[in-house]
Image (cartoon, rainbow, N blue to C red; front, top):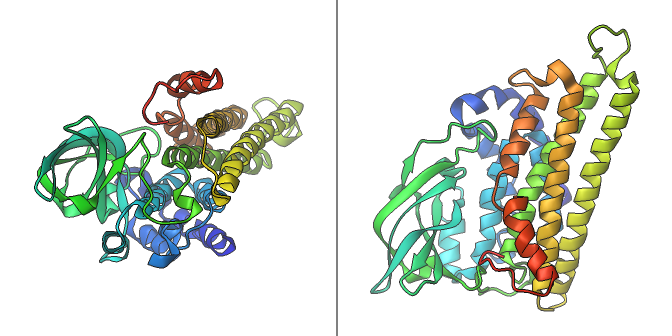
Length: 376
C-alpha cells in the first residue's frame, strides 16, 4: 500500500495546476487521468494474475481516501474504475484479460442500477437500456450496465465504450468533474462471457481469494463513504490553513484563537475520526473472516453498511462545521472549503449512503428479519 499512497500524494501538485479546468470541463483533464493510470491506481483491485495489486480492502480505501482529500472528484473518478476492477474475479480469465489488459487503460465504468433489459439470444443477450450516473464514462474502455433478464434476474452486461451513446447531462453543484453522464445502448448483442449474473446482488466469484469472497455491496458502500471521508479531511485542512491568517469582522482576534473555532475544529476532528474508525473496524472484521474462509453473514453486511452510512454522515457534519467556521471565506467559488462543501453533500446524496434508503433495511436485520431490499 505504501507505494500507492505515496503515488496518490504525489498527484497533489498536478491537481492544483489543473483544478481550474474541473468545473469548466465537468470531467478530469486527460493529463491527470494519464498520471493516475501511470501510478497504477486504477489497478489496485485487479488480480495479481492479471498484473494488478489485488490490495486488501482497508489498504485500497486508505489510498482512495487520500485521493479524495486532494479533491473529491479525483477520488470519485478513481474509485469507480478501480472498484469495478474487482469484477474481474467474476469473469473467465480470457475475458478478464481482454477487458483489464487490452488496449487503452483497461478502465471499466458504468452503473449498478438495473435500468436495462437483457433478452436471451443465441450465445448471449440483446441489451437495451439507458442508465444514469455513468461516472467517468468519458474515459472508460468498457462499460457495464445492470440489466433485468426475462426471468426477473439481474445480469451485469459489459460492452465496449464505442458501442455506447452518451448524453451530456452532468450540470450539477458538486462532484462536477466526475462526468457522470447518462448512457444508452439499443438492441446491442452482448456475448454470454461478457455478462455476470447477480445472485442476491452478488457476482458469484470465479477466482479464488478473499477479495472476491467479500460481498460486492459491502465494498461498494465502503468505497463511496471513504470518498466523503477524504473530502472531510481536506475541509479540516483547509480550515486550519484559513484560520492561521483570518480574523472575523469587527475583531482583531484571529480565527484560530477564538474558543468557538477551537471547539469546532475539535468537534469536526472527532466526528471524522470516529466514523472512520467504525467503518474500518467493521470492514476489517469482515475481511478477517473472508481471509479465514468463513462465510459472510447478513449481520456482517448490515454492520458494514451501517458503519458506512454513519461514517459518511459524520464526515458531512464535519464538513458543515468547517464551512460555518470559515465564514465569508467559505463562499468563494473555487476555494477549497466551498468545493469540499458541495462535493461532500453531492456524494452524500448517493443511494448507498442515504439514511432514508438504508437505515430501515439495516434495522430489519438487527431485529432478525430479512433486509427487504435486493442490493444488500
